[in-house]
Length: 291
Image 1: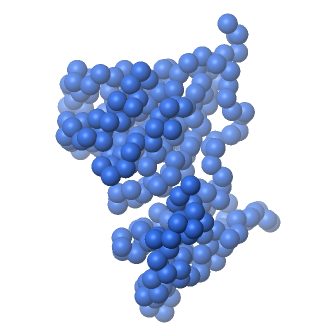
Image 2 (image 1 turned 180 degrees about the horizontal axis):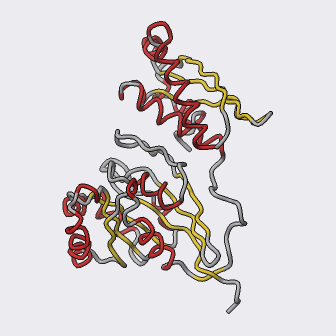
Image 3 (image 1 turned 30 degrees about the vertical axis):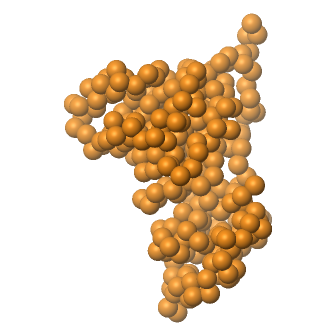
């Protein structure tokens, strides 16, 4: 066996909506790449984060929430070497009974499976270990950890356990690589999370984010964004009275992108209308919602 081989591979992070999946992904990878929002279904597309040490390396993959009306992402499940299933600690037994969770667990049969019980801060400290032990007796998996990412509870333990399940191989990624996603893509996801916070759900869910410029010069990041709404009547709502709503979106966009990239950000945000774009396959393809 080559002496340069280390535990290295892909680890899928999956779970139902609002279990704290993206918060856990960010804590494990040490990044803020995956947008976090109190509303469900903040993650629409897979986001990657690479965590490296001298003796191991893993590419964690945050995926859209498992849900009843869509199939589990079997393509990612098939290429990943291990899986972290995130369940809500307050109702993990109910989560396990969801048909789409059962289907997902069948999809990853044969792969190392770890279970993270999210929202662990809602449990008394003296009950967290007991709950993890109880769950480990009920679930056929390699281990259960109760986690609370904002408090860093259980994150390091879970990461170490997950990376320890990876096969031995040469490093998959060179030093300095922290994600397989482009900066433009991560920016669009961050902006989409912003509008999900600022706008009502019925409008934000039918507003596409189209980045026309994403460039760095003079030590500053310049971003020009189109927010494409599906109804003419929504344009005024997004702009707001005297432009107040759009100004808030722009300010929060610059704030989150500065945090994401570590660079000062100057942005332009425009609102455009493309009637009923969610019902047009060509528009879905253009905005990246179909393939």
